[in-house]
Image (cartoon, helix red, strand yellow):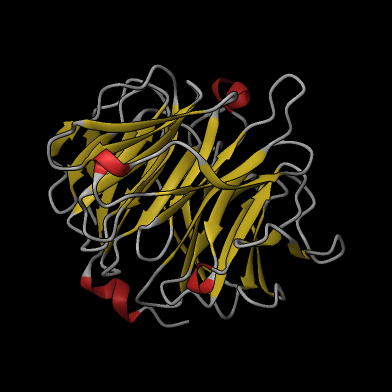
Length: 326
């Protein structure tokens, strides 16, 4: 399996997202310019210019026409995917950390960081089909917990919003009323900051990664802990194969400690686990720094990883990957 190295960012990667058809890959980094690539050969298609700070997160609409990005410049922007044109800007009073389109793309949830005396918050915005009708007002603003919310996604049928962040607790909110419905309990939950949260293809469960060196699989509706995957380093990114029962975990030490270790000792590899048996089945090496972002192609035949080293590595699986037996 030879990776395709995609060099387009000058700064560390923060987020990767495939569109639903799996032919485009969107990457966000700390260099202000979200980028779109062809997902089969890694060719760069274009960049979305307009942000004035690190871009933390992005999401693409189901029909691949709209892109939403959240940035440290305290804005979230809507873009035309095809032309790269900036369509609309949502302004906030603190950095926008996470963005997620609802099913049907009529709503988006945007999380903002705590800043000065502001707490973290979840903002639900209406997304208009016709950009001339787009407004900046929020349908719902949920005041979040202490610390940052690193990721918030929509639950089944857009009825709930699931969030996770620095206080290591996963919360499920009612997206209509803003009421807190469920919290993960301290005993079974993560012990440190939740860095990443990704839903399964069918939306029945989701996976979280944390600095407590584990990833955990949860039931989407009941918030029951299903599985735990333990590694020996902090987890920055997680992904789930839509095809096989595989979970991928990426991480590494904190960026500040990277220069003190050999790239092999730093263990900067994406580790594959069997989702059911919780056993490690393999790893993919290559990055010269922690892995900050992971994404699976919706067809399950390739995956990409983005690192602190500014590279996106795109891996198309060999045929024998699909017959791994434990």
